[in-house]
Structure formats: C-alpha cells, structure tokens
Length: 223
Image 1 (cartoon, rainbow, N blue to C red):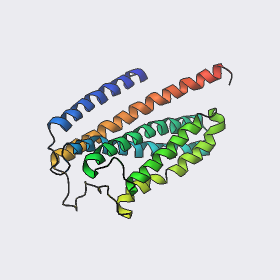
Image 2: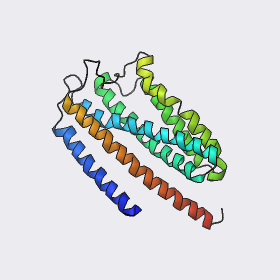
Image 3: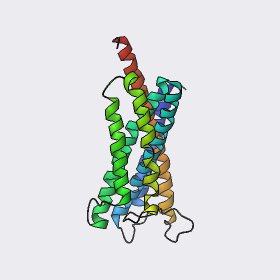
C-alpha cells in the first residue's frame, strides 16, 4: 500500500467515524438534565483538547530530537504538529465559549482552565508565526526551544481544575466519582477521542508532506 492509498484510506475512515459520531451525538446520547443541549458540545470540546495535548507533545519530542540531531525531519514534524495543535486549541476555546454562554451566562470567564488554555494557544500561535518569519535553517533551533518551553503549559492546563478553584468542571471519567457519565455518553466520548486522534494523524501527515514539497521548492529556487 503506497502513501497516497494510506492517506486516502485514513481520510475515508475519519469521515465514516465522524459521521457515526455525529449521529450518536445528536440521536443516541441522552440530553443532560442540567446543561441541556449545550452538553453535546462536550463530544467535540474534549477530543479537541486531547488532540491539542497530543500535538504539542509531538512538538516537544520533535523539538528535542531536532536540537540533538539537527535533522530537518524532526524540525518539520514539530512545525507541522504545532500548526495542527493550534487549530485544535482554537476549536477547544470556541466550543468552550459556546458551552459557557448558556451554562455560565457568559462566553468567557477568566478562570484558571480557560485562561491557561488561552495562554497555551497564544504561545504556540507565536511559535507558528515565528516559523514563518524566515527559512527553517534560521528559525529551527530557536523554534525548538520555544516548543519545549511552551509544553510546560500543557500540564498547567490539564491540572488547573485541581490546583485552583474555578468554574470549569473537573474530570468526568473518574471511577471514584459519583458524577461519572452515563454509559452512552462515555462510549460516544471515547469513540470521538479515537476519531479525533485519527483526524490529527491525517492532518499531520498531510502537513508534513506539504512541508517536504515546500522544502523541495526552496531547494529548486536556490534558497
């Protein structure tokens, strides 16, 4: 199976999974008694946050490997994953704001989870912008340092609901908690986590391939 076939098959799998997940979200899972219809954003919001964590973890690994080896392959992986991570962090913020309006009465609250997520978004958006300010050879090593330091904010985002008192709900998948999700909600959420992980893999693959083409073009132009 060649690369094009693999990418095509992955895209089809993601499309089927997304359609099945959306059908479950709108027609299968029960409506939350307290949050109402707004709770259905949960199945997009949480997987998007997970993908953002995953993407920035890949940035961390790629950045460390690039500093150690100087390989453009690792640099391109980190750069590509950062772009995808910024997109999914943006989706996380937007869906969180859409959920917050009916539940909190406001689109935005400067509480720990939202604020730290916004900082995470700004840091990696800055990373992406910095990468576009020059050729990879000049910006790669500095960007790698930014990618490594920026990852410090990921655990701050994740554990903010435990470390500081805020409005954001704490984790709902907790065997010791009585606030666990109904099984239909849990199954749908885990299914969407899988679909969004495959979507990340698809986007990352396409972005890396685009980056390689850009590198070839620069080489042909003698830059």
